[in-house]
Amino acid sequence: MHYVSVEELTKSFGIKPLFSNISFHIEEGDKIALVARNGSGKTTLLKILAGQETGDEGKVWINKDVDVVLFEQDPLFTENETVLNNIFFHDHPIINAIKEYEAADDEGSEEKLSAAVTKMDELGAWNFDTKVKQVLGKLNIHHLQQNISTLSGGQRKRVALAKTLIDIGFEHKHVLLVMDEPTNHLDVEMVEWLENYLSSQNTTLLLVTHDRYFLDAVCDEIWEMDDDNLYVYKGDYGNYLEKKAARLESDSASIEKARNTYRKELEWMRKQPRARTTKSKSRQENFYEVEKKAKQQLIDEQLQLEMKMNRLGGKIAELKKVYKNYGERIILKGFDYTFKKGDRIGIVGKNGTGKTTFLNILQGLEKPDSGKINIGDTVIFGNYSQQGLQVKEDVRVIEYVKSIAENFPLAKGGSLSAAQFLELFLFPPDKQYTYLSMLSGGEKKRLQLLTILFRNPNFLILDEPTNDLDLPTLGVLENFLAEFPGCLVLVSHDRYFMDRLVDHLFVFEGDGVIKDFPGNYSQYRESIVNSQRSTEMISKKKISSVDNGPSTVDKRRQLTFKEKREFETLEKEIAELSKEKELVNIRLNTSDTSFEELQTLSNRIGEVTKLLDEKELRWLELSELAK
Image (cartoon, rainbow, N blue to C red; front, top):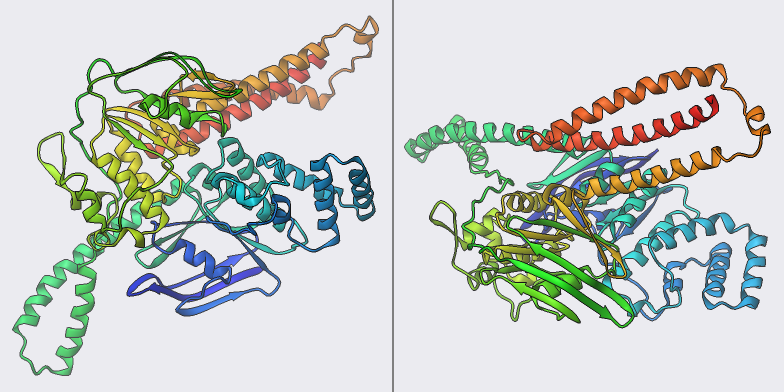
């Protein structure tokens, strides 16, 4: 079924075009990711599709049987209403029955609960209620009578997501779900649940996200908005990077050819008399087209910057027997760690386990209840917090950066000016003279990050730096941090980002328990899954080996012919998968492996491990029958 057609759509703000003459189609079942730099018009395009804004030119056609549901970055609520009333906003018998049931359950009123259960039975509303329960539980939404105005930013985002998912599950046959950064403010378990939920649903989807694992798991097509145009790439994120690199290489060759032609035509233009023939006028018009092409500049998003970092001494940071409580809530319980040069630590854990408090204690912004914290004299912290850009007055971007420093020192001598450093972080010259108040939310986040790095710290602490950043900026940031020679402590729900940059984790498990795990995030998750499967296998083995008397052996059925063949095949498949896993691990640890190959290998190791676990579990089941 054809959902959407857009033809030659153009939208500008002032004299700046966001996109020009773009055309595309969306069919039922499409799952599309939209990527672009902040300020390129991604959110504007989503709002046009949702009917909240209109284009300057062009046509937008949406099938009359299709409902467009928009999940926004900054969701709107009825502020004086409860969470319950904001989520269940439909006036429909089933929705009203579920609302009454949830309210009664939340209040603990047996009389109201009994009446609500009866109404649910009469309307057959339990199937839908089960889906509602799943969504609310997975997004950790429990206090439904709480007023929406009392919620934090992260809580509001989760309520908005629940509202959207429940909305599309209710009486909609054909829905185009449009989502703007749905994973912001979700912990990793919620993100993984959401990607599984969206993948399993027959949903037509257009989303903006910076989470590349989420993108790969959910979408099979990537649209990129770049230089006013829209480019379509089939496949995953790795394929998009490969095809985009080929496009840029082709564009670069085309621009170089235009520049050579431009130099020749410029000489001809200068020699021509004022009165021109029809033929020369045609050549003159062609000259201006060539000039426009020749003066194009391709922005290289690969940041290579050898910074002259302030020297780190032998003593960096030492925490001894550190305790911290908030009332009965335990944050740290005798935490010990000595930071070493080159430490690259990721911090993971559910929201509310004390990750941000730990970072504040490390920097001396909060005091522990007890314990010692010794910081080296040479340590210069660079702290990227979730509070955002703090400015006293509205100034231009270049003025704000120059107020911090005029130059950035380089390792091999020389320096970069503030303007040059801004360009490296995707602020072209025309953007550098924009007032801070005119920047988009993502551009402000990028500037905040840039100004922290411009101070040239040697101990970086980044608390959720990927929220609201676009994928091109993330590429720039990752390249910078991959070469950063100082200490790095990173809190992020972006699994791809963590996998590339950290080599061990502090896992905040709650109640003050912090586990030091040697490895990146994917390896940590793999260890959890393997541990859970091992426990399940041991439990099944124990159950199957319980001696219920002599009759147990007699009653055990024999393997069927088909099961015997499967059992023999499994042994061969397990051996082959084990060998492949070993070879992939060797390649992953080889120093000359490219980043693109590392990404492919990382995906494959996950697939092989999953297959191996499944086949080993099945082999164990059949082996028990074969005894």
